[in-house]
Image (cartoon, rainbow, N blue to C red; front, side):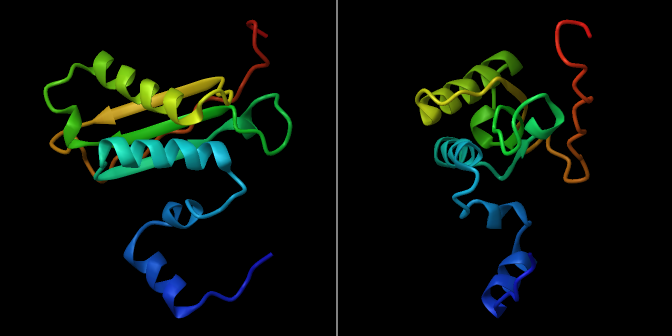
Length: 131
């Protein structure tokens, strides 16, 4: 259902990307927790959190499969494996027991970041176990 947006909301859309508006929704608690944890701990210059659960054999509305693109100066001097471990540790701490089955991570420094880069969607799930 579409609703009429206020000038303030339209201004927010114009100033930043649409995913910022999703931060305030209670409908995506795991996605919001991931976003909040990464924002608080890494102060990213760019962050995308994509729920790809709909592509898998899970109930509608599930939050089990995510792809994250995070660009942070805190990654300077860290090898890729340590960046991924840092992101995983933040997400694990933030979710405190909530279940996330899959987390795909793209972690870059601001110098490595190209604003033209687009996250590619993951391939469709084949049902698991080599099906």
